[in-house]
Amino acid sequence: MSSQKSETLPDVTYWLALEIAKVDPIVDLDVMYRGSMELDYLYQVLTSKAQHYWWQEHGVKLSPVMVNNAFFRAIAMLHHRNLEFDRSRQTEETTWVKELLGR
Image (cartoon, rainbow, N blue to C red; front, side, top):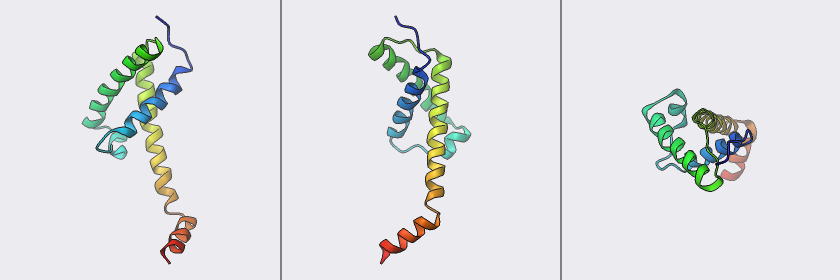
């Protein structure tokens, strides 16, 4: 049994972000970021799945604290990405491109 490594946190965060992005129907990150029953359910399912995956694939036992941190970092990362995407859609450059494509 391997112990967890400090560099595992970014890997688990990225893995969880990909798993969250695959959820169907699409997760409302604004609601989840503030907390919801959907967040609680997704947390239980994906943190268990992450621990199982890392143990099966890498022989690494993840601590509950590390998986918790990775999950909420993934939610924050996806939420921030969505906010930045929404902001970028409202810029002058985007408006100009929309007008150009609309012609």
